Amino acid sequence: MCGGSISIPLSAVKFKAMADQIATVSKSRFLNPIGHISDNDMKTVELAIKIQLAIL
Image 1 (cartoon, rainbow, N blue to C red):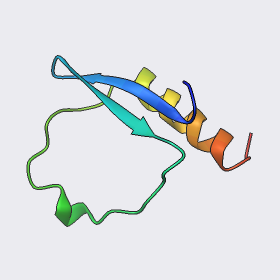
Image 2: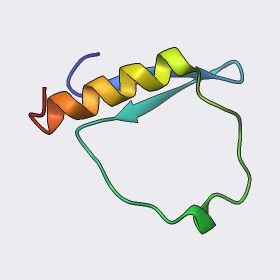
Image 3: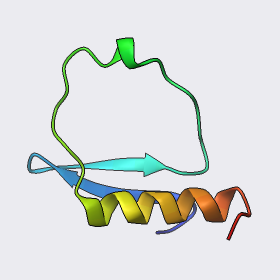
Image 4: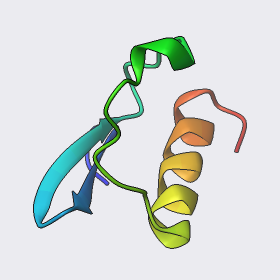
């Protein structure tokens, strides 16, 4: 993790989770899911968000 962003491999493509740019999004905007994030990657994203919100 560097600067609040986390690299997430998904379907052979790397995406970036931006923990320093948190926004709410309606579930209705997710029309075509491209995959699932692993439990380990989700824990990394959760940790980054906690650090950004100064919860940890």
